[in-house]
Image 1 (tube, rainbow, N blue to C red):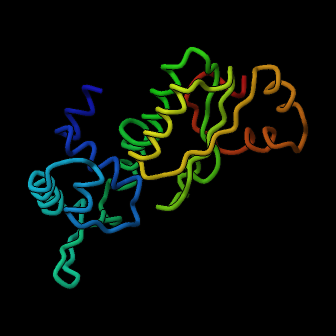
Image 2 (image 1 turned 180 degrees about the horizontal axis):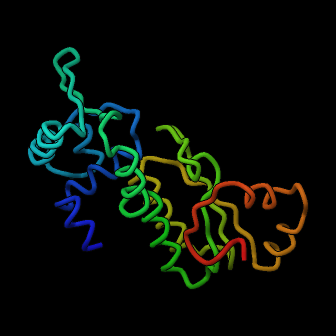
Amino acid sequence: MNNMRNIFGSRLRRRLLAYCFEHAGEAFHVRGLAARLDEDPGNLSRELARLSRDGLFSAAVIGSMKRYSLNRQYPLFDQFREILTRTEGAVGQLQRLCESSADIERAFIHGSFARLEHGSPSDIDVVLVGEVPSGHFLRELGGLEKRLGREINYTSYTPAEFATERKKRGGFLDLVLKGKIVVLKGNPRG
């Protein structure tokens, strides 16, 4: 995490970039984004102005509002998106949540989010293997959904159910594990 601080600067910048890369197709006005991130609008405005000067964001005035959006033509757009998603964004946060739960043995993301084909309204599909998630885990997951602005759908299996289901040719787990997944905890294919 220290390396992220060196590369991407302040906590505000990391949160801003993680959120905006998770919602890369959207345009944001400062006050709405500040409310979503629970950050000071003045500090956020200055950060967006700096990132716009650097070319990572584009700014456009629509009516009386200035709206910012990520510049998809930025030379390191795809690399930044992957790094931020895996560290500060959805993947990093889900990974920390799963790692903190001793009841979860394996966890992974599948579907459009794992394939990096997700748009702003896209949900995140997760498979959890272990004991049924506790109330604490589910509350944390709900808080994460709110912070990310995305629905997180999970399918939960006991270790025995997972072993049985993944052997079924053409079954859900067989198809999911043949596709692109992002591992959050353990080895789902092992």
